[in-house]
Image (spheres, rainbow, N blue to C red):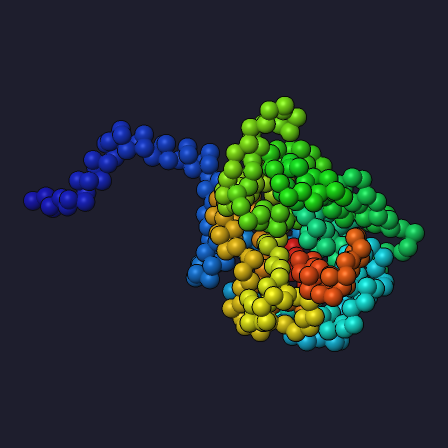
Length: 422
């Protein structure tokens, strides 16, 4: 008597005999071979997005080992962007304002009369781990024979200058220089055959605000699909640090040029801030994917830098701002009204689909606490102050930019951590 045949055995036999199943399996194998890397990148980026949102993620591979310049990894489960500020008079500041001749007069607060130095003595401490100390020697040796470039607006230029100040003291005076060529500023460390550069492109795309000196234009226009206008100057860079946010926040819709600025009759459409910003982010990622090698180069994106223009945001007296503020905001959940969460959502949405590994420097929350660190009135004033302004300092206080040394040195400490210990 033959043993009974199970239903599963019948299914297996039928499957083996089915030519349709054979064709399906062949197709799956072909697609996996052809697009396997893309699938893995999308999957890994989605994992990173979940991790950034605080959701539990099971990682089975050490992603940091694949990233260029990495020499280690951040402790598992550690978010270096989540923490608190602690006073540190031993290791802060990293340098003296007077010792770094590359700081623009818009950022030299001590030279322009700021009476206190309290803003210089704060150190960022992550909640669940320690931040590696900034090692200028390691940074310079890593940059030997390479180019590092910051691309964006004046806030990214501040971070660029901070990086130069953190490094230049190790380079003999006759072996370093800084030159500006229109939108491009280049610091050269001759001994290392290295350059640290800044490129002015406040929208990343071509705009009517691209003049590095004269760009205060209220009616801003951005040209769609024009990133190569600036991108040709970024080619060949080994470490690229982007930022763009402030210039998109106009309080109204953004004007987008569909043709060329040379067209006699210009075709302009209006988009919401979020849609216009999404357009720019997608253009940036396309450029990166086409022009950067993920096996040899690194790309960073710095999140929005907050302003402190409304004291009512932190419970202060109405009508005031960052002027005369010397203490930090202690509420761990504080989020300024100028920081649009919808823009952060756009970044998360677009970056989660990227096939190129973009390292996101999320400096927004930690900078939100620092109402004390702005240049305020202690900077070079390009126009003579009126009697009314002199009588009311809050009316001309700069609550966008940051004193150096100061907060932006911490941004570079975080960049250092993510570059070497992702």
